[in-house]
Length: 126
Image (cartoon, rainbow, N blue to C red; front, side):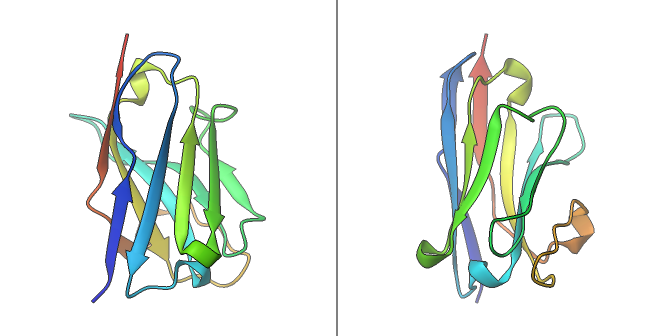
């Protein structure tokens, strides 16, 4: 049974930093494209950042470009999201997801992602 688990969320003041992590059991993350999504209260889930198998291809939403960095350590079966210069509008539940895509492919489409975690809450205070 596949289980995807996020960690690292919490409460931080505006301008602060957090690093989210995502691990999985029953799933080799190194053979999947990965993505981070977020959903704020009353809003639709949106894509934040995406990365291909090797980590060489990445994508960022305009709202986080220059502040967030996605990375992966396939040897540790772990995905990361380093979040700097956090803003109150970054407050949301953050989800990690894995997609069974071909090597090199990055997808920003939520429907591409087969496996999802339960989320980790990020709250940024002003």
